[in-house]
Figure 1 (cartoon, rainbow, N blue to C red):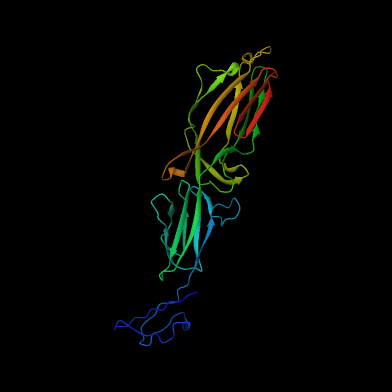
Figure 2: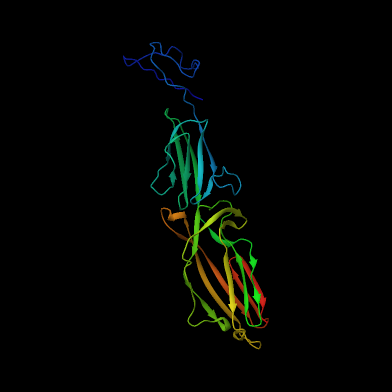
Length: 293
């Protein structure tokens, strides 16, 4: 470490009693020949980081999801002034601007963000984070909810939506589905076409991160209910198709600085194959199918 000694006197100048390359006396201070006070030894330091989310992987990672919270500290513990380099108001926030610790809350758009600590001697250290936006939507492990009766057939599954990539956490985000209109044909045709409505509320993500990404805290029900079965007659030869291209929207909880983004469009797709009487429903990376009686 490097020590800095600055001595003051009433005359405006002084000479230290020790050489410039000698260590300070006991207590980490040096005294001037004229008795003037000198500042303590001021060490260089590093910035350490630890993510609040315990998943995925190492908590010292510097690739972080939008809205992610990271605790920062100086090593060795040193009081510094904290700042976000070249901040334009869209690079996130720090919980406090001085002290040996602070908490960085990431911005809501993809950016490279450098955080600086500067102590009273002018020593500086920096740490740079790569803030990542969600890249795509998927589903966590599904539960089959298909049911067949003498008059109806319901094919589908229930699963929690997820946000990719899986090497960061989006626990401080929330999502909802948006509006779209169906296209359909054959025995699955609707006239007029069916509108998928906005789900109406934001649902928060959980802290769980798996192979399909950060898992939403509530499941989605994906199904179709064919009633009556005469819509798909036993002797029919016409295939059917129904598609909703549903936009998935996300934002940092509460809206963040820049608001929501559409991070993916998931196709809610139903297909009916007349020759095999197979009805299949799929959405994202999950699907279920049954044979129509």
